[in-house]
Image (cartoon, rainbow, N blue to C red; front, side):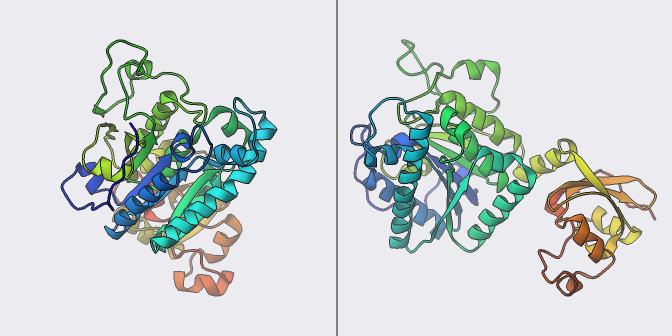
Length: 391
């Protein structure tokens, strides 16, 4: 389907609740949507229409994160590299050149719409190593709270694995999980998941809704897509698994039209992957069972009651620390008698936490010279067992 010119989007009518209720949306944009297949040039009209959609969504009170491919495709055009597979070093060189053009395009188009674009360069490793993950999360969330539009790109100049395997679909899902997004959009050159890859079987049917990624669903995926886009439906299903585990709804929709986000709002042909739990619930489940614990935090009776009432853990309620941990590490929260109350991600390294336990939050800045936050463990970063505080 070729793109057709449309007027500025007006996202104000009835739509799927997964879209209308979403406050934070992550949108992944594939290389084939941004770069012309024949000339390698940036598809400026398409990108303008996407930023029109983003501006309208921001005006409607939503926060948007863009995960954008395209640096290598644009860079190879500027470097006049031949068509066909590139050597790893050529891909990295193309990424270094293309990244400048891509960032400039986003910056200028955002500015024209009175928006501020911010560039975030990540690799999958940044979303897997805990401290790097937290640094990236805090940066992106701060940008969102300040009204900026983070544009996340793979750091292709150094991330060899991502270049070889095209993991931008999975990267976008991990970014969505990182920032507790409500919805992940994968804009693609296909309009959803089909019972067989289009063109392979004589009769195929697009699925409107998927609620679980079973072996039968996985069998429907084909191999990698186009020359410009190394991902395929298989990587999109891998992204779906990550989104499901984080309680995030995901939609695969065509990006081969102008104003693709408005098209989703208006009910275009697409496939919705509907999660069965909300992001916070999924995050707490992950905290409870999937992290190596680096230490123990012992709390007094007052803090135990506060935790049971749904409060965050403040330094004043902590009586003792054990173990060696850094900021963002997982720790066990224990009562003074050793009972395990829950687990969480601690906001201060052991050396700093030891100086502020038993003290009021208002004293943190005086003691440490800086106050990262008032809580030792925020309630959103902890998973408590279903027990009540003992008297």
